[in-house]
Amino acid sequence: MIILFQLFMVLLAARLAGELCHRVGLPSSVGEILSGVLAAAAITQFGLGSMGDAMAGGAGAGGAGAGGEGGGLFDLRSSPVLQESADVAIFALILLAGIEMQPAEIVRRSWRSIAVAIGGVALPLALGIAVMWAFLLANEMRLPLALLAGVALSITALPASIRVLQDLGLMASETGRLILAAALIDDVLGLILMAVILAVIQSGSVPEVGTLLILLGKVAAFFALSITFGWHIYPHIRRGVALMQAMSVELSALILAALAYGALAEFLDLHWVLGPFMAGMFFEPKRVGKAVYNRISTAVASVVNGVLGPLFFFTIGMAVDLGAVTAAPILVASLLAAAFLGKFFGAGIPAYFLGLGARGAAAVGAGMCARGVMVLVILSIAVEKGLIASLEGNGVPSDPTARQLFSALVLTAVVSTIIAPLILRAILAKSAKS
Image 1 (cartoon, rainbow, N blue to C red):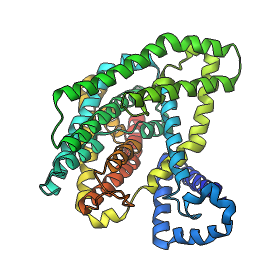
Image 2: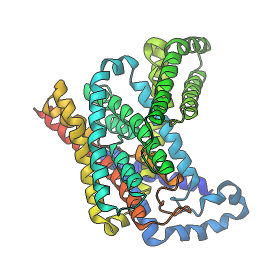
Image 3: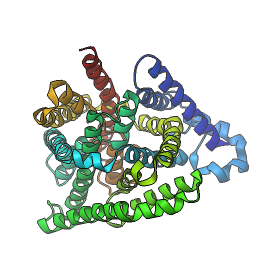
Image 4: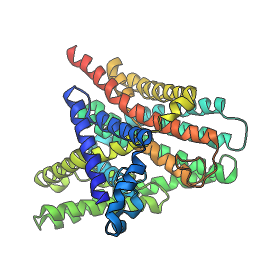
């Protein structure tokens, strides 16, 4: 009962807020994030979590087995089912992005997207390191914490970018495909940089060239194996499945491929988020047939946009600690400025010189500002390794600066994910009028 009630509340709040924003001309993802922010603030302000414990007591032994670890009815922040639902949503969002981006499009835009991605990583990385170097005291954790902030600011969240572009109807546009290709490259670079941070924590210094080359070799091996499988083996499997003429079997084959790719990424010490994207990317009409492609892509898009997407953005909003604004306002403002300016100019300037024009370059820069889930992934790895303290403590060292940094980076990720579609819509609205 507790699990069902929590999912009911979350999905209802997210869908209503998303629909309200959509009706006033804003992307629905903005409302879904804000619903999570407001829910977290209400639970903290009015003590709804403890009230939920009292209400949930009536469930007794009958509800303990199913949701005993989930807390009370309103204890959403510590609900394991919401966290697991967010992981499933990430999987589906990235799978849908792969389905909607064809390999030929990435190849055709590879040199442009690489230039935009490198600029969109280098500038915010440098600004993030500089900001934290100015705020942190000189100690052994100064370098890894500064690197963590830089990496968090350099990320472009692929799922968040997907939803923004979907809301604006830009998935098939030149700008949208360039943003998604560059965002994918940014995520790969961010995971590589996170491995460098972990090496710094373990050794106390920047890893040697040999260690970095091994890491780059694993990345190259993943893409080589996944491309080979998708290009030569995947079509044969799809043709065999197509003979069964069953949509459920076709969808199962796609999900199995995505899981296998994710397992391969984890085996190579990369993150599983790369797997669903690669699996979906080779699920293209010329390989599986237009009828199969239309059926599956419509089914996946319906589930993502109707259920999993709202749950995902609600959980992002729930991660915000508004207390960070009052505890460290200058730190939050500095990180927000570095996050936005770094992405906007770091990605926008290369796009401008690649021939997109001032307005197109501004659209690319704004579209790359969304961060969302990948920052949370990076921060969760840092918490797991004991680098920073989470909001709940989790047994890691309680450094006040680390606590402020965690909350400030989460807030930066959420605010940038809210601002990006607003600025992108304003830029494209002016372009449409002209």
